[in-house]
Length: 101
Image (cartoon, rainbow, N blue to C red; front, side, top):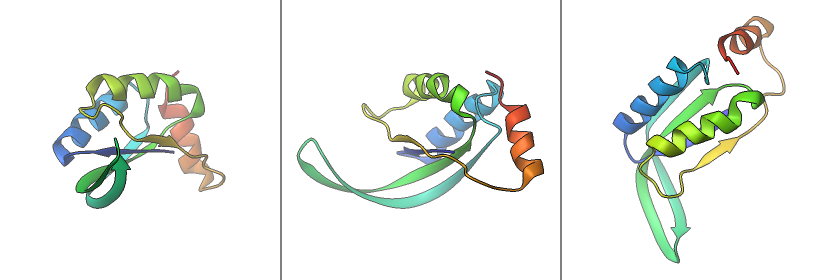
């Protein structure tokens, strides 16, 4: 599972569509208006962002990162992958079958 933040839901939608169309993700959920707090380039930042929750496979991660970086407006986009350790077997099988590496 990959978490990616975006400055707007429109940008999140655009990238999410691309990831699914390219078969780098089985499914992407976009959560609009998460509030983010961070320090970037020495300055405290606080902003609303959209969060994409991407269901994919480890084998597709590098290409997924490349696609996101090519379309993302941030110079340093948040792209964080976490393992899915368990879940509904049929759903996990569908994810595996949907992502093409």
